[in-house]
Image (cartoon, rainbow, N blue to C red; front, side, top):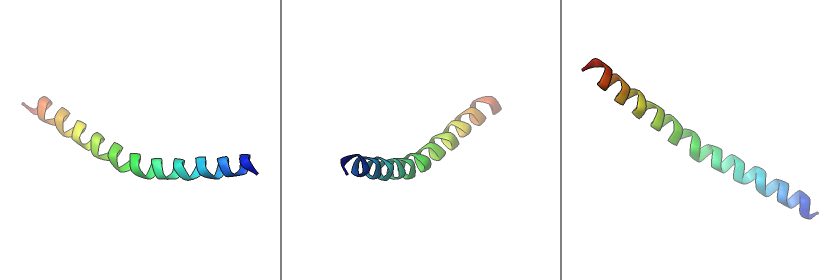
Length: 42
């Protein structure tokens, strides 16, 4: 019973964390590409 609740909570937090981290990672990746492009072009 307790283990099932823990598993469901962990998976829920995993999905929420993934949904929050994925856009942040994409934004950081784009920012890094912009910085790399700016420094390499100049």
